[in-house]
Amino acid sequence: MRLTGGEARGRRLKAPRGLLIRPTADRVREALFDILGARVPGSRFLDVYAGTGAVGCEALSRGAAQAVFLEQQRGALRLIRDNLGLGPWFSAAEILEGEACGSLADLARRGVRFDIVFLDPPYADPALPDALCLAARLLDPQGLLVLEHRTAAAVAGPEGGALLAVRSYRYGDTSLTVWRPGNEAGQS
Image 1 (cartoon, helix red, strand yellow):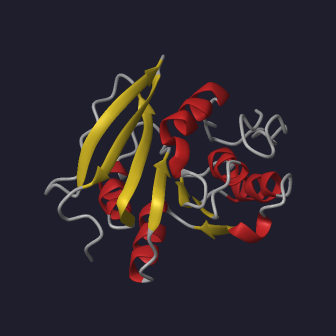
Image 2 (cartoon, rainbow, N blue to C red; image 1 turned 45 degrees about the horizontal axis):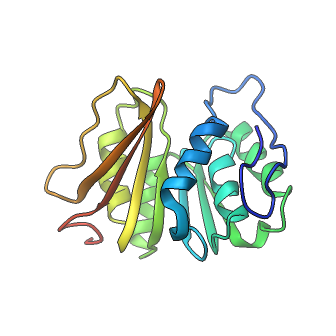
Image 3 (cartoon, rainbow, N blue to C red; image 1 turned 90 degrees about the horizontal axis):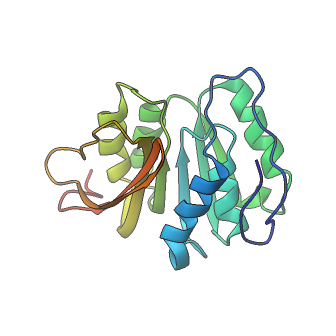
């Protein structure tokens, strides 16, 4: 695994050994940042189900002002810290340990908002609908939410119009679905 762009392009990231995490492939990560384009520099970026932290580190390498990493596995938390140490961005990062829905709810209670929210949950995660709903509340009005998921899985946004689908991009067995805030996003 390597960073695919920005000031740290080409740096090798530490990968999981024996952990039950599925890092976002380099080509999918590169495609994600091609999709996000000029939205990344100066952005507030949230990496939910962060795993190795590769996506959030990529955002920082490409100029994000802040990246927050949500992860519950202790081994993965060590990987995130190690990977953040590969660049000069540690002070722009925050790592939150805990289950995704609980951490998202805590961020919403704190009134935190993000320009970009990226979710890469375990495939077939039963908490995904709740996580999407909670993540929608954290989006800035002009923000984007991107979900990485298995291509074969049909993914619906939260009920009530909190998120409006923009587009899905397919990369073999992996897809990225992009949403923007709907009429209820950002409301508590």
